Length: 229
Length: 188
Image (cartoon, rainbow over all chains, first blue to last red; front, side, top):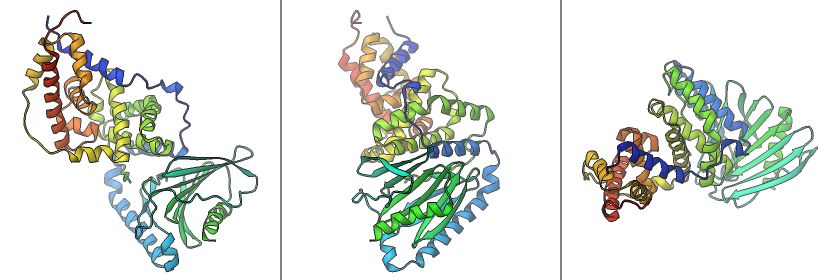
C-alpha cells in the first residue's frame, strides 16, 4: 500500500524531531542574556517598526559613517609610532538609532589568540575579583563583584569577535582618547560600557551600576597603564 | 566580523508582530543550539542576533510556515547556520564543493519513489541516513514547500550551493531508496 505525501512529510518531521530531541524547553535554559543582546534585539525590532527609516536616513547614515571613520582615522594619524604598534583601529558606525563599533586590523597587529590576560590593576575600591572564565583561546572574561549589585565585567577577546552595538536611542555614546587609545563610551540605564582595542586585543569594560564618567575612564586608564609597564 | 545592517526589513505589520512573537518564544532555544556549536555565550548571543536578522529578511517566507514543529526546526537550523557562519566552517565547506548542474529526476518521480517503493519505517530510515546538509534542503524544499531561492535564503547559502545540495540530496535519497530495496512490510 502506497504512502501518501502527508505520511512522507510526517516521516521527515519525525527524523527532524530526533535531530532536536535534546533541545531543552526554554524554561530549562538558565543562561542570563547580556544587556547588549537585549539592546541589539530591541534595536532590530525598533528598526522594523520604522517603515520609512531606510528612505529617510540612508544619506544621513552614510554621512555619519563617513564622518566617524574619518574622525577616528585622523586621531590615529596623530598617534605616535609606538602607540601605533599597540593600537588597532576602532571603527565606529553611527546609525540613526544605534551605534556599531568594530575593530579592523592595523598593520596586522590584532592577535589571533589570547597570549596575555589583562586585569584591572589595582582592583577598583569596593570590588573583588570574583571569577575568570576562558571558554576558548579567543576570549577571557573577568568578573569583579562589588556591593549593592554592582559588577564590572572585563572582556578581552581577539579580533574575530564582534564588538557589538549600542542602542543610540536609549543610550548616549561618544569616543575619547585615553593615553593615546581611542575609547568608545556608551551608557544606558545602569550599564556603562567602554570599548577599545589595545595590544592587539579588543577590550570591553562593562560596569553594571552607577559610575561617574571619570571613574570609568580611570578603569580604562588602569588597564592601559598596567599593560604599558 | 559580520557587519550588522539594520533596515526596514519587515514591511508588513502582521509579519512584524509575528517576528516579535517568534523572538520571544524561541530565542533561548536558538541560543542553546548556537552555544552548543560555539561554546561561547557571547558569540552564541551574536549568532542568535545574526539569525534574527536573516529571519527578518525572510519573514514573508517564515510567515508561511504554519506547523509549529516546522517553525521550530527552521529556527533551530537558522541558529545553527548563524553559529557555523561565525566559525566560517560551513561556508568554506560549501565553497569547496564543485558546481554541478545535473538534474536527478523530477520532484514527481522522487515523491513516487518515496510513496510507492518503501513502507513508512523504510522512508524514515532512508531520510535518517542522509547527511544533515542534504536532509535539511530536502526538508525545506519538499516538506515546507519553499522554492530554491527561499531555501538558499533560509539557510544563508548561495543560490548555486542550495541548488547543488538539492540535486545531490535528491540523488542521495534515490540511491538510499534503491539500497533499501523496495517494499518490506511488517518491519515497523
